Image (cartoon, rainbow, N blue to C red; front, side, top):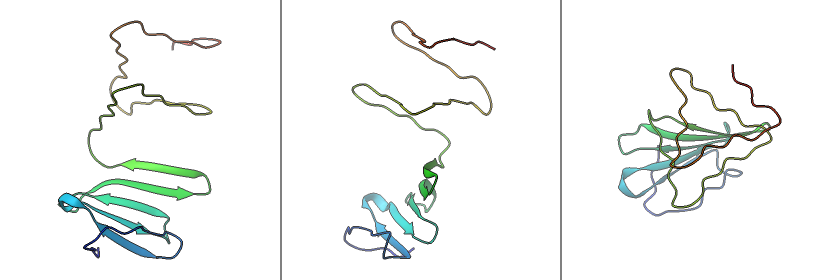
Length: 108
């Protein structure tokens, strides 16, 4: 990947491939032919990839673990929402009540 000394905006419409050096050895790269934005770590490992298509955007995190942490409210919203564990349990934990609201709550 080509690295730039100064931060610049990347225009996916005009550049087929463009890369940008970030602080700490990280880099961001675009590939307009594949409609992707990739962020790599200092060792060159892919941290995340954002893909764009007619069906929408897809965020792929290529690290073994992820923590989302905010000081306030975290909300996930969509026409439908699915949570799936490929292996192991799905855990929900709260300091207070856990509320499930819906027309029907189906278990198994």
